[in-house]
Length: 67
Image (cartoon, rainbow, N blue to C red; front, side, top):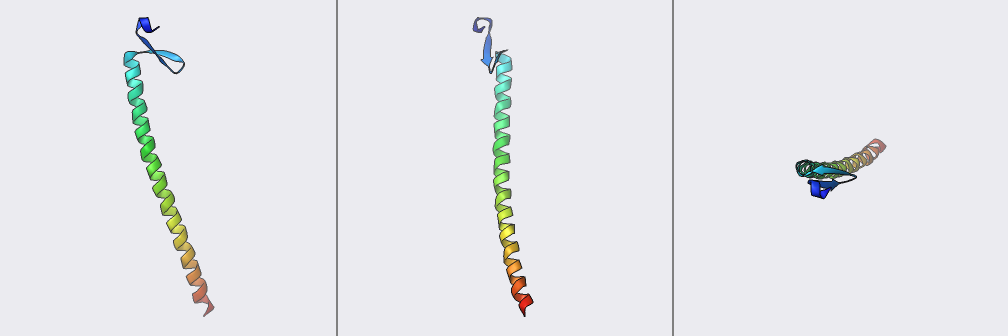
């Protein structure tokens, strides 16, 4: 198939033009996945901070309500 200008891509054969387009798309997907991963990590950190803040305020309210 390589003699016919085709390249292996997964379980299929594609032209050089298709291979270039697929690799470009793969790169764009990887970039998007990296951005989403960073956003996910930031959100997890923010959630942990909010949970800690809620916990501190609950303790404060418990103390205040005792008086």
